[in-house]
Structure formats: structure tokens, C-alpha cells
Image 1 (cartoon, rainbow, N blue to C red):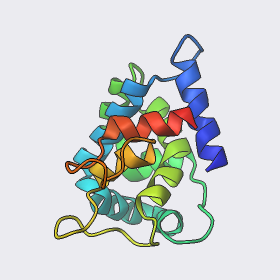
Image 2 (image 1 turned 30 degrees about the horizontal axis):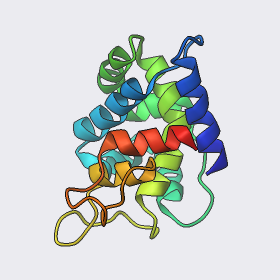
Image 3 (image 1 turned 120 degrees about the horizontal axis):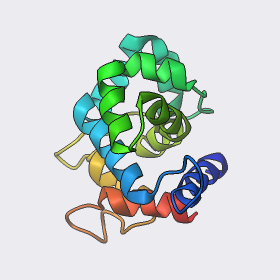
Image 4 (image 1 turned 135 degrees about the horizontal axis):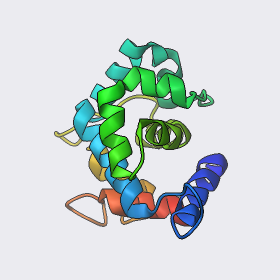
Length: 160
């Protein structure tokens, strides 16, 4: 995941005294709130599609290269109300949240959709919130009957 690892590592390092960085709890809260406010991974992808970022979002889900997205375009697609809430979690504003999310979302969605499609929740499918834990280097779903948690996922991405 190279670039994603670098970006998350920079965010974590910045959160420990660097300017503009965020720490793991802030990143966890940001991603969790984004998914909750958007109606999960499917809702987030639908919101991005409706906001004009469907092609980029589909590249994150698909098997090819992830298209980048600008913070301004992402903030516009997600809307000022949601970005304001997310910015508040970082102790800043919507622009700060959109900058962090523009760096993190392509790789995160890519990792949450390893088969090139959004996994079905329930009935043996993968719950995106649980899957975040294994992405972050936490226990796999097989290791943890309750599924990995968001903190484990984000922590693993920050350690890589």
C-alpha cells in the first residue's frame, strides 16, 4: 500500500507534535463518523457518485489503480454539513477533514473491497466497520469472532 502507509504515518507523526497532523483516535473517529453519517460503505459510495466522484470512487473499489481525488472535490461531494462535523472531530474545519480524507479514502475503500466489489454485510459477508480492524493490522475475522475493530484497522495502517 506504499502511499497510503506514508500518508497515514505522516498523519500519526504529525499528531504527536507535528503541525497539522492527527493522531490515531482522531483518525478512527473521523472514519467511523464518516461511515456512520453516510450509511456505511455503500452509502458513502452512493454519496460520492451523486457528488460527481463516481468514477474516482469506482476506481477505489475496482481492481485497477486508485484515482486520486482533491480535497475540494471530496468536500463538495460529501457536503458542508458533514465536512463541518468531521472537521470538528479533528479540532479544525471541514477543509482539514477533506484534506485528510482525500489522502486516506482511496486506499481505505480499496482495502475494504478486496474482490473489486462492495462486500455484502451479514449472511457471511464482510461488515465494513469490522473489516477496518484487519486492514489496520488487527486480528483477522477468523481470529476474532466478533470481527476486528476500527481501532485495530487504523492502528495497523499507521504501523506499516
